[in-house]
Structure formats: C-alpha cells, structure tokens
Length: 112
Image (cartoon, rainbow, N blue to C red; front, top):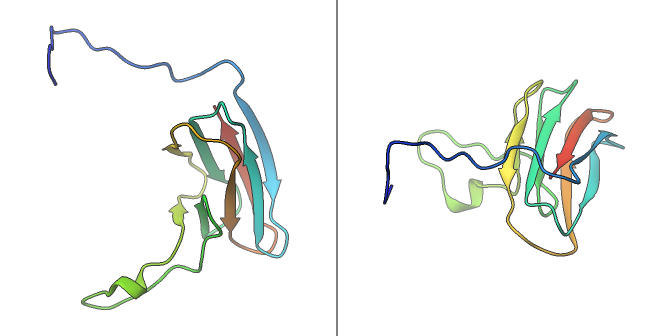
C-alpha cells in the first residue's frame, strides 16, 4: 500500500440508489437487470442448498477428482446460503444477473 500514513481509508459501503428484490426462481432459473449505475451486487440465497450466479447463464457446478481440466470449470459462481456474497462488478451498461438453483429458491438481490 503506497503512501500509507497510519490511517485506514474505507470506501463507502452503502450508496444512494441502493435497491433490492426477493427473487423467486422459476423452474430453477431467474434473472435481474442491473442498473447502469450499480457497481456492487449482493446475493443471499434464503432457502436453497445450491445457488449459482453469473453475468451469463450459470451452468451446473463442474466436478473432478484429483486433477481437473479446463472443461470441468462451469459458468457461474456459487453463493453461500443465508449470508450475503458481495461482488464488485465495475461499471457497465445493459447488464443482467442470471441465477441457477432449486425449482422455487428465493434469493435476496441487492444492487448498489
């Protein structure tokens, strides 16, 4: 850390325009548009054992034993149940979050 002077500088955690939704998946999939001004998203599965999120449609989790190959990696990121997983998604336009999970899983989604 350059120019460290003994003080901690924390960025804002909450921004004007923060929004959220409780999204119920339909047949195990769902999506939420991301406002162009949002740079951080939070995902909290409320009643699921396995939810994956991505900026493109997630796939079922890949598996391997011992040594994995590149084809074992699948699109999407898993999210822990009952806790928020936060992602810094940077600046962008016309983006969408996509979800894969159980048939009627409920996911709290926050965009900031």
